[in-house]
Image 1 (tube, one colour):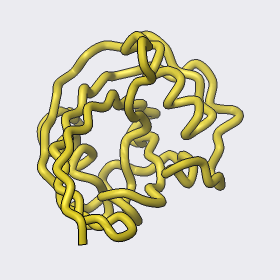
Image 2 (cartoon, helix red, strand yellow):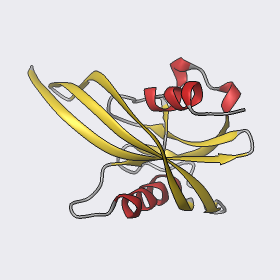
Image 3 (cartoon, rainbow, N blue to C red):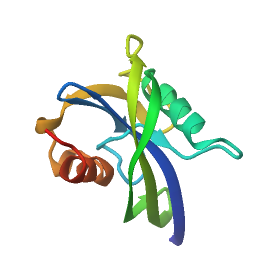
Length: 144
């Protein structure tokens, strides 16, 4: 089995609606089966906020704007992908965003690694159900 060490830098959005947060269902990768923040890696030459806006639309169908950097978070995670054992240092820039329109929310898709977005009551989320990024937000940033 081949072992790979890699760095992944991503941009992620926090979208809130009252006591609910918009999360995606992860279909593959280190957080497969968990709920995660919408977002991901930038395309070559893409500006950070343009990439974040694109990722949120692709993964959830929600149009967001008015981004504000809240924090950054790093974690080290190991997982298997096909015949490769991957040790990933995951760095995320976490932005607060306002949603402009959530009328066309995609909640049953299969695009790359997202199964679509859905609003979740924050107090119903537990560590075992969410990615480290969501858990970090709940424990360190979210103000009730």
